[in-house]
Image (cartoon, rainbow, N blue to C red; front, side, top):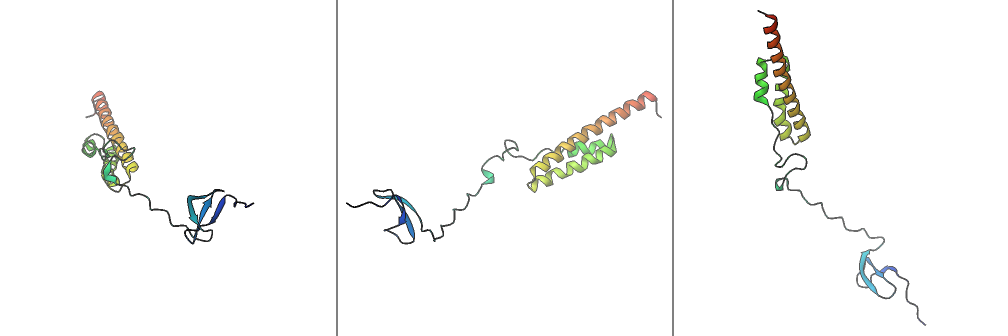
Length: 136
């Protein structure tokens, strides 16, 4: 009575330097490097084509956010201290976007908008107060 080898990994009879799995009755298609052999390196990750589509989380066409620079410059006439802060933030939007720092560009855009609105509101309040109190 002959006994069949137990299922497991054995030296591959078809190739040296590798092992093939014996299922207890026949050789399978499963092959692996021999225990002392180094497996081949994994394939490189696929390259990403940035021009293929939108960037996730940055709008449908991945466009740079508005910089509000024109409006920020106009705030100099209303409330110049706040207007300067608006101009500085507005001027930084496009540079941050071009460097690929999209989150920072969005932050600069939001700040430019907030300070522009604040400067216009501050200028309007100053105008109303000067009309009410008759500052000459």
